[in-house]
Length: 262
Image 1 (cartoon, rainbow, N blue to C red):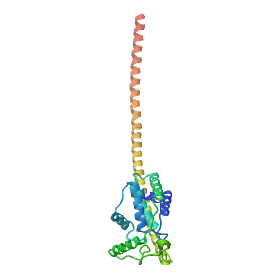
Image 2: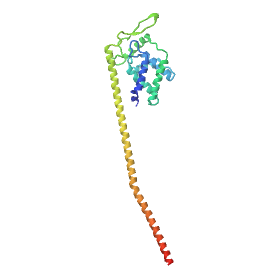
Image 3: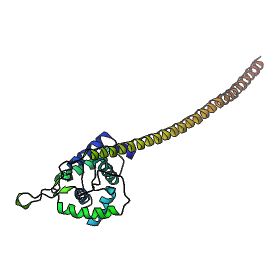
Image 4: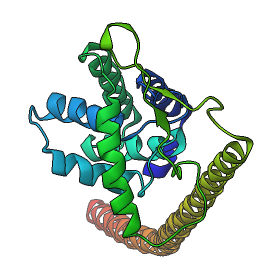
């Protein structure tokens, strides 16, 4: 039931709205990075439980939710935001999911504006490379760039104006991104089919149980009907016998009275 909620059109629409409200990595409009994700987590936690997460907790959340990648795309984000909403909803009513997603949008609109820092990105890049080195090598992925993906350009007034490489996404990267999305869609279809099969089995079991109950009730009623006429006939025979005895006794009395008169 919960997986079916994730694929509802109204819930998907609100998750998509949350994604578009998030700031994106400079020069990479299809991705968010650790800075953006930790800012989002801070906004959510502060509004839900009025607490602050430590930097270590935020880093652990990012490493787990991003699957060890440098970037996170919308496909992965939809999975994570649904899990978050599902955790905080007490029931599986769609209205409760929609309400919380609407609240998240309001929190993002009212939160302080996000300021992306290239210096923080450089520190995070060094940490990520060390963390990445502890993991097994994986296939090339657009979410895990080989080189630092940002360029430090300074504008007037000494302000940092971070920008990405000029080509943004190469043809190979776009192809890898499409392959990742296709894998996610195939996995979602498998889960939907599994859920549908389980639901069909549950319905079949419930129908068989209801049929067996109705059959037992029908047999019980038929037995009652078969036995009731016998009882009625017996009662009628007893009543007729009683009436016959009463009639015979009254006839005797009348004959005796006539004899006396004569």
